[in-house]
Image (cartoon, rainbow, N blue to C red):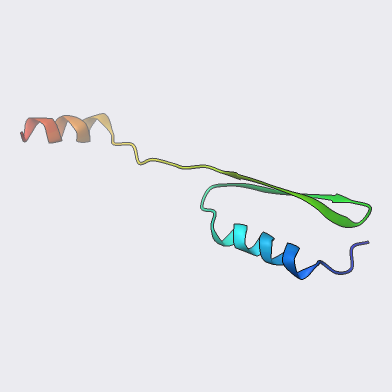
Amino acid sequence: MMTNIKADVFKEIVDHLSNISYGAITITIHNGSITQLDVTKKKRFEQEKPQQVLAKQSKR
């Protein structure tokens, strides 16, 4: 059972949680201690619907 988390590890986890909008954070535990933190960030781009693109082009 993991009873306490080192302050620097906890801060690292919180920092990543604060700075991610889309993605995943995986915490690896070995013998009751956090041994690894994997962060996968995703960047999403707004996609316009074809009707919006055509409307913009027809206004030019």
